[in-house]
Length: 265
Ligand SMILES: C[S@@+](CC[C@H](N)C(=O)[O-])C[C@H]1O[C@@H](n2cnc3c(N)ncnc32)[C@H](O)[C@@H]1O
Image 1: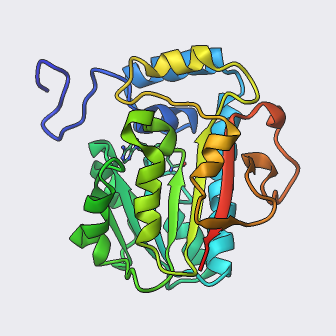
Image 2: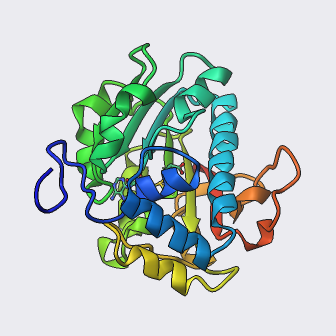
């Protein structure tokens, strides 16, 4: 461990990290004291957050099933997070065993846990990459080894775009990725919002973390789907997007929008 809290493998334990905060909130073990303190402060500021992260994860699985049932066999998942079973490839391959998945995250801890994340079939890859440099993701040889950009791709941006500031130009980043996708591709995106409850205190927790939390209102989140047609029921709070059971308690307070959309031909 270096004096600055950064370990030889690049894992920084000096400040909370989104992947590890999220892991702790989901009941995982790949987190440090600094992350647990931040997550507890987050849960104190936004009491439904534990239900919210589970609802986000459940949305992701329903969305993955939807795109695979609709013929997609390749998934590019940017902002993968730490392994939480069932992971994207497990959910997708349950519907169609030939689905290929490229995982991309900018946190070295996600890379370090790749072994647990990856299936043994060679149909998945994990890449250390940053959403703020979308061209590098598109050109990465390990992404290209798994994803053929001449065939439909489902792009997953699940609970990650809110870690981009306005100065990062998130709409421009999503548009760059969209333009690389062929017709018949899908965008699956979720995004945190304060449309349903004041989240100033929750946002403050991330001001000390490795990435800031940038809550956005509905109209701004909808803009990320420019060039795509939203699938029914459109952009929704995640528990209400094609639910497969009764919504969890406090669903109306959950501050995550989610949508699935097909690229316009
Ligand atoms: C809240 S987790 C979401 C994990 C998963 N997508 C899900 O919804 O279950 C956010 C993930 O995005 C990653 N992340 C944050 N900013 C990123 C960036 N600029 N580029 C790539 N990944 C990023 C974090 O490291 C973390 O693993």
